Image (tube, rainbow, N blue to C red; front, side, top):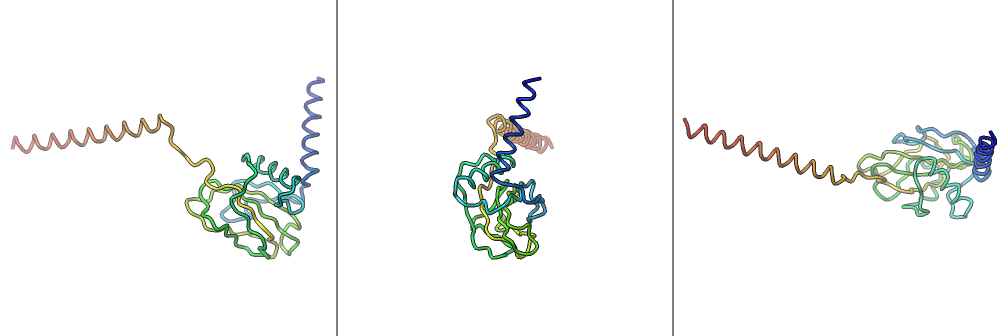
Length: 184
């Protein structure tokens, strides 16, 4: 019983520490951006997209909740959005992509808050669209094409075997046709 109480206290303490560094302002939605996100974390109070240590810690924790172990480097950062509803990071977005958007105090937004998103950008997306008008401030692209599929050796072996069998079947079929032509 003491162990269970200790574990509960540890979990509560960890949650309190995380929330103290980045208090939840409102709840984000996967529909905040287009294409629709797979998951989101936030809106956390304030602009957490700077390089000061408490903001880096908050970014790391939020991205971890989305399933991404962030190394501390970013692909691109867009500042001065000035309420724009379209964000172009200047690089093609592909596959699983992690971004964050800070919304200022403009109308229609959550207030001064930052949200983190995981989305599937497809094969070659040039920009994302924000659903909150008159609120965007800045955005960060953490990673794109995360976990791109690289076939394992067993998969390669099966593919080679499949191509070999297909070639064998085609060659055998061609031989049968030649034999049938010669016989007639």
